[in-house]
Length: 394
Image 1 (tube, rainbow, N blue to C red):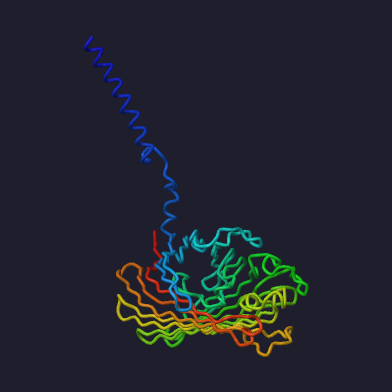
Image 2: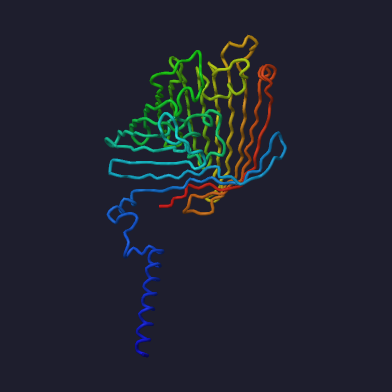
């Protein structure tokens, strides 16, 4: 009887241990018994692939017309990026922005939050072809920076469709000069979605954009350029001509970048003027607007740990149409921007910086806009403390 009791107890104990082991195995995903998520034959591909979490996070203390309005934590930017080499001559890049609504766009079918989703094929050492959703190679240094490095965009870039689907062609003329040309959708939304019903504008059957770009490096890399010209089809026989001239001069630890931007819009794409002119005067999208942007970035790297930076902006919005008989000037609005910044890099082997800055904007309307449309000058500001990093996960 005693032996039977011992055998029975041993049997029950062994069943209990087996059940526990199975549960424990499922919870921990022991690779001895279960296949890995990425097959071993594919794991070598990770050597040619990068995953990057582009982050800009801060505490904002906000002001309106000099009065404190509140404080809040904010994820200014979070863009998750995958890029790498699928073949010795085929590259891919995907980046999605989690700080933008993920709504599918009507033209290209991709979410508006998707910045990049394209492949690049190197036809030779100097010539390459790209296809998919990509960054319109608009030129100038402000737009060429990683978005997490921009604390506030100027008007033209802020209100533009910067990521469009199409094809691109690149030619590397050597270590000092490269050229590119892109044929893209001119927008991500259908014409009527963007502009509404227009009695004097007919939607184009081929609303395309063409972007050409030159990147140069001279005087031993001390002077660099990113110049471009873009032609966007807004409607039938209505276009946007955009010029961007970016220049950068390096003088030891001191770097000066200056961009000049000019956007002539036969149909108001940027929209600052349309937002000022009331519907009671003209209920449709305005024509013949012009936007001029001056942007400067000065930064001085004191040492490996500390950097001083200043961004300055001057944005001019003009309306060259004569549909308003009371208009006595083309000037509608002048916007100033200034961002003094202190940045601290605690690690030499990690691209992570902590920053403190003030983002100030001054919006000054012309007397015409004030008297005719009731526009009023105002200022905004925010004092921010946070961090920026393109965090490489693998």
